[in-house]
Amino acid sequence: MKTIIKITAIAICTFIATAVQAQELVKFKENGKAGFKDQNGKVIIKPKYSGAEDFSEKLASVSLNDIWGFIDETGKVVIPFKYNSGYGTGSKFSQGLASVSLNGKWGYIDKAGNTVIPFDYNEAWDFKNEKNYDGTPKIYAHVRKGSDEFCIDKTGKRIRCW
View 1 (tube, helix red, strand yellow):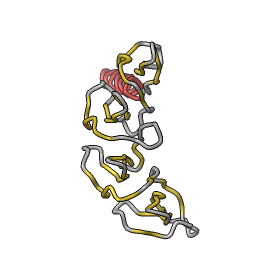
View 2 (spheres, rainbow, N blue to C red):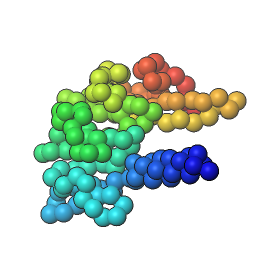
View 3 (cartoon, rainbow, N blue to C red):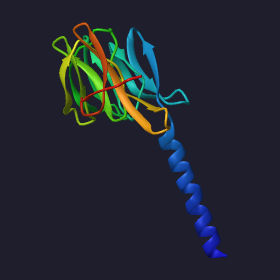
C-alpha cells in the first residue's frame, strides 16, 4: 500500500512540475515596451524590449533599438543582440534553426548562435516540416538570392520544393 501511495505521489508531483514548465509565456506591451507574462498574468520578463516575437523552441527573439537577439524563458540573453531584420520583426526557431539578418543578408543560426547556413540570401523564411508525396518527411526553407527563389535543406543544400 505504501508503494502505491509513493508512486501516486511521485506521479502527481511529476505532472505538476511538467504542467508548470509547459506554461507558455504570453507577449505583452506596456508603455511601448514588450515583455512576457505567464498564463495567469504574472510578469515573468519585464517589458523592456522595443520588439518581441513569441517563444518558439524555448527561445524568443527580442530587440533593443532595432537590434535583435534571443532570450530564454527566464529572460536570460542566450544569443547576443546583433541581428537586424528587413521585415521589422524578429525571427523564430523552427526545426532547430532561425533565419536572421546581418548586414543586409540572411542566413541561419542554431540555438547557440552559431552560423549554420551562411549569410548569403536576400530573404530567408522559417524551416518547414512537411511530407513528400510518398509520405516521407521533407524539411526545407524557402530563400531568395538575387532574383532566384528556391528551397534549401538544413545544410544549405539547394533542393526541390514542390
